[in-house]
Amino acid sequence: MVTIKLSEKPLIDQSAQAYAVVCDDTYVAQKKFQALAERFYPSLEKIFTTRKFSGSAGSIITVTGTRDNEPVYLIFLGIGSSQSKPGQTKYDLLETIRRAMGQLIRAAEQYKITTIALQVPEASWAQTDDYTLAKELASTLQMTPYHFDQFITDEARKHHQEYHITFCAPALLHEKMKVGIEHGQRIGYAVNQARHWCDLPACAMTPTIVADYAQKIAAPHNLKVTVFDEKTVIEMGMGGLASVSQGSTQECRFVIMEYKTEHKNAPTLALVGKGVTFDSGGISIKPAARMDEMKDDMAGAAAVISSMEMIAHLKPRMNVIGITPLTENMPSGSATKPGDIVQFYNGKTAEIKNTDAEGRLILADALSYAVKHYKPDFMINLATLTGSCAYALGPFFCGLMSKHDDLANKVVHAGQRSGDRAWALPFHDDYKIAIKSSVADLCNIGNESYRAGSITAGFFLQHFVGETPWVHLDIAGTSFNVPDISYYRVGATGFGVRMIAELLMNWEQL
Ligand code: BES
Ligand code: MN
Ligand code: ZN
Image 1: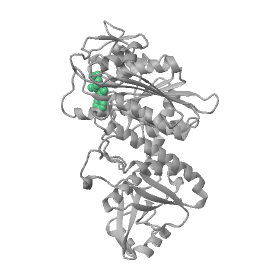
Image 2: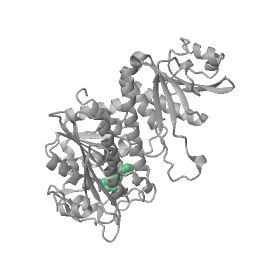
Image 3: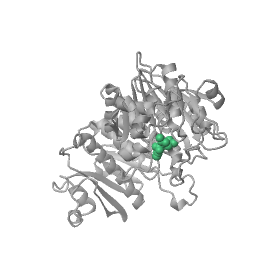
Image 4: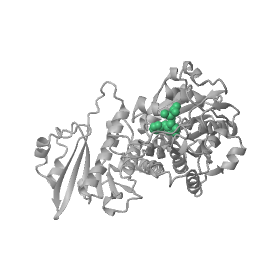
């Protein structure tokens, strides 16, 4: 956990082990470091020259000074220029600041520093406001120390995860920043919780355990939770979820969480998350290499459930329904066989040509259920749905598919602003025919001549949303093992939580 407090006292008057300053490309040239140099490190300017530190984005320099016979660390975090470059937006500037916060915590890990005084950069540098800046600083600082170490027994291998950080900023800004910090802490905490659930191995994160977590987090809040067990799922006609689950010794679950705002006439948003706690591929079994990563095939569900708790704290002016179908996808004597035909909750049928295309089968029931019982004004699903999306877009943007430009634009903007970025794939009807079956309404894999596996998967889902304005996010590439971003580590990213927070809190402005 990271604690953050606000102080109006100047940076050098703080009593921390480390002093951190965010430096743009004017910092060194304009000698803005002089007060720090005089107090702790007179030859600072020389160090900047010899180590060629000019404040460029992503650069960092740490020097050690002395105070009362104790080391004092000065950490300078480069963020470069705020001048717009071709293709760069103001959201890239905010992301640069986030990554600088990631680097700050990494430096603290390295030097075993636990108390830090941070000079808060000016919000105007990133063309943002003080509330948003504080929120982004706080959420990133909360996210960075996260380390999945529950099963490591050697204490020496565990990372320190507790930090006390003081934000130094003019008193005038404190009121706005205080709220930003509170919100950012909540968001960062929810991201880490989603990461933890994904990082837990499938033996410790079965569908029943996930459903229990959903119930546990809802209890202290005003969230309603409904959990259907496997027997109920079958009785209700959720043939997609039942067919994926039937090969596993673990029972499936179907979880519905509901947040109601006190505001009258607020719209309702349904969030649907794919929750495959382990995807072996089933009878169409996956190759052994990297199959372990398929414990993360519940990243959509983890993001939705963790977001529901965050939403209970942030209290957006919207009603939110969180729906997660939860199952394992395993091969066995009772597993679904290629060629089998299933019927979904809305009555449509599909031929299962490949049991590894299981995500769309469980989402089909979940989307149909959401539409029928909640008639949401908007619906968004998050799913680690296709390897082809991970190939197409890599780890930095998830794939977005939608026919509803207003909603899609809101989601893209929320993604840009929050750091959980989305990129629209062509969602054109030309691809639609690829999932036709000769023996059922639909086929669960696209005809090979259409290739575009992410888009054809999106069109499969479209059969279950009716007229509801809907966005499908394929988060297969962004949910785990994202390289180069300092505030992540190997493992799950909690992708989607920050985007959901941004979307709900700024719905009208996006
Ligand atoms: N969970 C996988 C998709 C995936 C792959 C997520 C890699 C993250 C990383 C999904 O269930 C799957 O197996 N999809 C198949 C679909 C194919 C059989 C049409 C795929 O992408 O290969
Ligand atoms: Mn699969
Ligand atoms: Zn899957």
